[in-house]
Image (cartoon, rainbow, N blue to C red):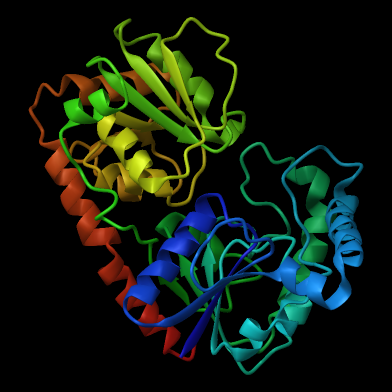
Length: 393
């Protein structure tokens, strides 16, 4: 059986999840491949669709096609309030690529601006699987509803939902939800309620994301032995990620508490003790950062099943986050971290302090590591995925 994973980018949370599953399948001898729109990483058995386009049409025509594809994706929302919104159309036709033609199973991940619903789902002789990393696969164009001006987009949403419903008729598609939260929303959607939904989380390499002595990790990173709080986000300016709540929460903690920020660099315009680690791609180094943190904080206002919570858990680091999205499904309140019910900086600070003080002497490290292995290890997820590949729908 030949598997082809489809993901627009080679970086980002969905890309990491896709790549990890691909590697887990390769380890067990499965013929797995990935097709990216543009490949930017050296990953075994992965391909760039743009390389294919350039060989077929030349670099100049391909660059024009990229530009038109980008503009046509943005054009429908040009005179509407700015929002993260995508159409179900693309100028690219991935069905022409040899790895698509040869594949038995097409496993879609985060594929906006890359997968054209009409073109791809006109192919009826393949098994399709779609892992939903956000709401985009079944929505009329939005990815999350936090801060999304839905009233301004109602007509476009209806139009694109109808286009998706039409394209998906008689398609052999199995839907994977990473969280019960997103599963319930998708099952009640106009686009995906026809299809069987399967609850299967992402996997993680628990040999890379492993736990070791916290003080040694801090020394390795050149940190003092202060209480250390970690925040991870690709873009801290994304309101959905809730960074402002964390900055507010730090004010309630001891003044020597250090806030580590992993992700896109930013200007620290506060008096907080913030160490900006910038973007880090090496997973072994990322694991060291998790191990150096006394607590990982995820103040997201809406999130699916964040890789970051999984990574922290595998490294034995407890998480604190709001009771939103799939986060309460990951964090066992009082065992592997704290789930904060009230959305406020003060309530978040109380949760962080509970972990840092740990007056009840909870073995957060052992609980986290054990739960990560039980729920997210490669062997467990691989078997669930392979079982799904072999089912008709």
